[in-house]
Length: 599
Image (cartoon, rainbow, N blue to C red; front, side, top):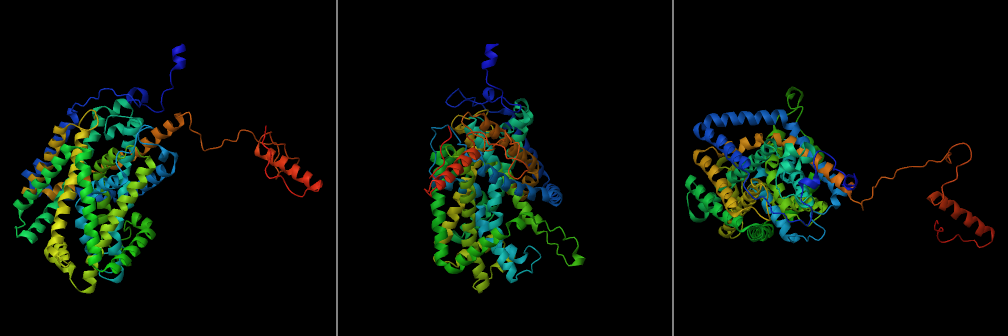
């Protein structure tokens, strides 16, 4: 009986924190074995998607295109609503008491300095895609602008310089932070040695369901999204790097060149993943960060500096002013063209697609942000990610995009015609050729593309290795990291060889639809666990004041006002007023400097 009285109360919800999460300071032996169900489940799904595309490429592409159109047409509003919800969620956890929670033990120091932390997060979170879209995205908006604007008009120019920053801005990083905040909390605060999405849902699902094969199936869905998102980046980077080699060395940009690029990139990120988080990923990210800054500064100073800065500031202001409209615009009246409305499919083709893309990438980047943010508070992680991520992406669009826009408007180069005739990679290098020392500029651009791709796949392989182990002690096994590094290369390479890579990219987008529900549950799970843990702390004081004693009569009611309880603010004020009147009566003329302290 005495034992039951001394037992700590059970935690809220259907999970037992004391039984399922390792207390701070306790260093039990981690179960670092491979989780066979997750490991082989991922391989089975990959083969199940890849082999039919290999055997029936055209039919597979048609089916995937239909599925993607069905999802974006019918569930586009769900993707946009999730973007709004993600922004509200990160604002809430940053502004509330949850934001004050430190990710780690009281004595834990920040693992990475702010500069390295920002560089790792930025380089791992965007990949070579920022180099690709930073230069060409405005060209598509210029020809097919949003909000029914006339193509190639002055308003089309203004929106073309704005929408790229919006698509790569705060909403994208808010989506990343949904899994990042939940996983960081359970990994660093609740001290779980398991870096899995299913573990973050334990407060809602319960321990039994979260650790069952249903929970592991959730992890497999997330892993498939990781690989599909990686394939998307690869599909953009390989032709772009191949085009660069053709411009620099005359190497034909055909399939074998792109496969060679893929192999070299794989060797780089495999070595980096083998070295681990500090020696590998941090080193590559730092190189990439400083090289990117140097490249952007060169373009800014060599190009029309004042124009680039002016348009950049205007575009940031326009994006901030219209952000709510841009986040919620669905072109709802586009079907009524007889009434003067335009049906452009812009939200579906761009905003919905981007939100779906960020969604499938979110598990990778979220796990990665969580891993590197130990020692910081949740507020620091949220604000830092939103600020460094959004600002970094905006700088690429401001400098690279506005330089290309200036070339088009000034008549120095008809970039849009190059895009329409030769494709995006041809337009990218046509823009770079107009800069001073074009060979050097293109060489740096190609090097940046390789390192960006390597750091992205580096992060994905590291997280994949973590997810398929039962538990992770410090870092996942080296052989496990190497296996996933080469697996990430092999699957897209086969599809690239057979021309089905774009189909896998599209498949990963609509396969991310279940993640809308899963990640919404992650928000609720984090809030539930964090709120209870805060109230569980003996030194936590509630911000809400409970009115326990009411007066019989108040000053605005008829009758004599009730006397306030001794020691209350009203009693102190009444005593202070009485002393002031007494002093005036005695001729002193001054009130006491402060009310007396209550006994």
